[in-house]
Length: 140
Image (cartoon, rainbow, N blue to C red; front, top):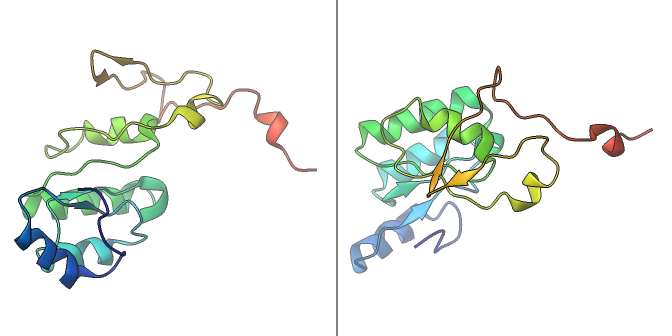
């Protein structure tokens, strides 16, 4: 069950987890590592969903994934698949990457191809994200 309660109510999430037999996922709307650590400490989550763009970049995302691994929790990155697929390859506890970048795909020069349920990271340097016709988004 993804994001079943209001962000930050870790006690309620913990109570919900104890009352149902469905895994609880949260974190796509968390904006710092502390929120993830609080959810872990409260035993409020089964799957963490950090978003590299919201949590503060690659380093904080990796620290969240490490904290999740230490707690025995999986991570399912939220949105921005071209970057998250690279990150998922670096940690052992990412069984899947959430996929819904259809809007993002429309502006990328080379969107990731989902083949047989699997993404393959770009072989381009860095994260491989290049925007197509970026100049049309410039503000003058």
